Image (tube, rainbow, N blue to C red):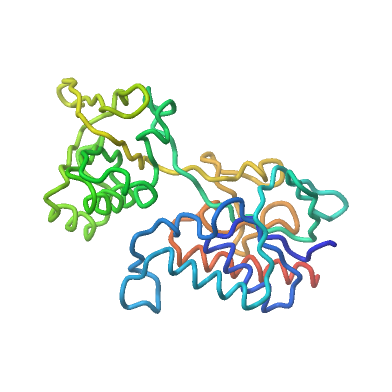
Length: 303
């Protein structure tokens, strides 16, 4: 079977694309290699999505989107796409189990955490080094942890961690945080969090488990060790655009370049959500991207 549309990624962008594909009566398939929801799944509270006057957990918002997808009859497959190729106007998607063919494709693979690059990080990943507080905070109850970063994600996760840990050090290598003012106000009101500006991470310490983090005062050069059981890293994201590097233009950071219709330079290939070059990455903008991408794919098929 050749699908009218295959959507790669079941985050908010991919799920929205599926909704609009169903409304257009397209034969569509959504492929997701892990759990639906993307980064939205790990959001403790979503406070800026229209229509929800009270905060809603990201997992619940995703659950509602997925329920809507199932009600509309859109098929959702759990697998990992290893390669996309184009031959004769038809896309071939190769997975470990099968080959899937599609007339159009929407890439909605999102973005993932950028590594800090500190010695010890890779070796201790999953052994105290984490990139998701909501996933792992439970394992650090009553401990001291470090959170690395100064943007919204880092502050969000530090605040979430404060529910579980005895103390959280927020380490940022600049002289001010980049997070929004409302988050900074919440941060300042939380006594369990200590903000440490102009602080660089030299090394993550430990043998089989994180035991501490060596830090440097970037103003004085003084180094010391913080005894912590976990290090949570939020220093940026990188787009999951590797599948289309030969089919689409990428910006210097690796984000997919599209026009306002979400179209790439390859006819029939569209991109939506956080994987795309755009000025704002939020659930609401991802949903809008997904809707536009599906409508554009339908119009492309109709000539």
